Image 1 (tube, rainbow, N blue to C red):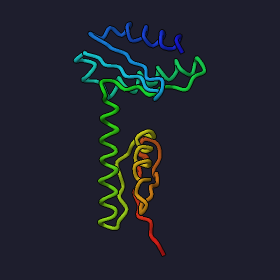
Image 2: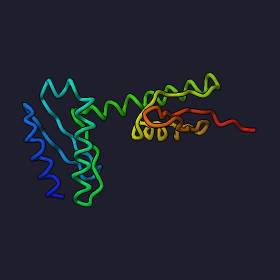
Image 3: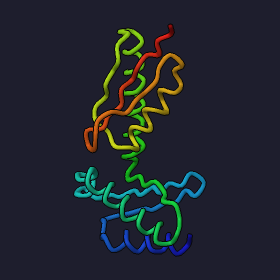
Image 4: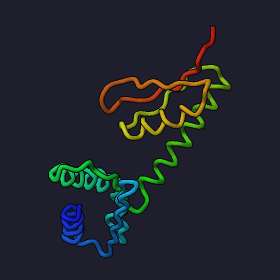
Length: 144
């Protein structure tokens, strides 16, 4: 694990961010990277998935399961927003008695929705669509 951390630290140093602070949380398998760089912050939607992919390759090369990368708490905030969206969809499905289709999401985000809706015994979720158009539908459980 130390070799992986060393490799990741060297990679971050080579990117020449104005200021970068890297933290490994082994218990929760998360890496938090705090960067103070305006250009990087403006392109977080591109930087996070790219670095996440590279870090995943580094972990796999060393025979380890990858950690989840979060840069400037972008992912944590995104998770919170998706959980909120799932709760709103649940409320709407119960009130309107109709299925609620959410926008297209990646697999990680869809999983967050599925986990959030599991807490509602009257509802279930189903993923539909293909590729980048894959989305979650929140449905009421109809008792007969």
